Amino acid sequence: MMRRRWLLFLKVVAVAIGAATFAPLSASHAQPALYRVIVNEANPVVTLTRTEASRIFLKKTVTWKAGGEVVPVDLAEDSEVRKAFSKDILKKNVAAVKGYWQQLVFTGRGVPPVEKASEADVIAYVAANRNAVAYVSATAPLAAGVRTVRVTD
Image (tube, rainbow, N blue to C red; front, side, top):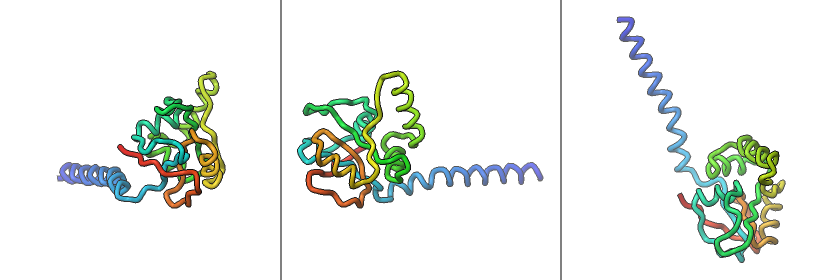
């Protein structure tokens, strides 16, 4: 009798853990995006896949298809928008991305993206640089010279 109760208890715990693990994942897809990707208005790119965006921000893709060097721009490390973007697009937390860049810098194989302290600084930088690509909060007011790029799965 005690063994059956113990097994039932373990099943209930396993189901509860599974529900706690997967419920936020499905709920997050219903939430509105926390960020949007932006480019200079002269850039012909209209959409990027998540994979393309990841490759751009990890500097694995260094030129635009239409030509020109891709210039990715990050927000500051402590930005909630950067945390959401890194998790969703790069599939890494900010600390893991920082480690990735430290390794590349140490071996002389790369430098991290330009980093700006505020969304206003990011938007101004993208507006002034034809090849720049960045992300800002979904509610950030965009200035003249930049536009949103659709990110698809």
